[in-house]
Image (tube, rainbow, N blue to C red):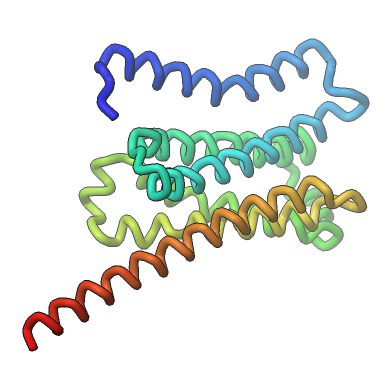
Length: 212
């Protein structure tokens, strides 16, 4: 799909603003005291939800390209990944700054009672190297290792989901929806990998047969 540069920049700006919209709406709601009885928890959970949503959006782009043949959405993969990290950072800050007031003592007291915190930290720290190496310059510098490093996104998706399951107390409906989405995305990726491998094997056997 070929788009004029001017229209492409407009589309890119529109996607950026749409991706930023959840932050704007949450900030506006907090400023206008519309987040309910526990605004800190509402911010905390809201940023966490959008982190997982952007992880899912990033994961869906490659299967979409393989199935439809449309490659232009792949241009947004880095943006989706960085927005996932952006909301993960806000999720982390909402907890450490607003909830714990940056208190190490409060953190140590909270962790034994809430193991989901450790899973949150693991997820966040796994996202840092992906964000740092998201530029084209780092992609060129790392070469083939860049793809290997960015496969961490699958681990991140799983640890984020585990964190969500451990966080909720009774109603598992929302984390189950995300679990189904991630299962379908990962299953789709696995099937596409097997299909590609089968095609390669068929090509190799066809060449051997011709040589015989």
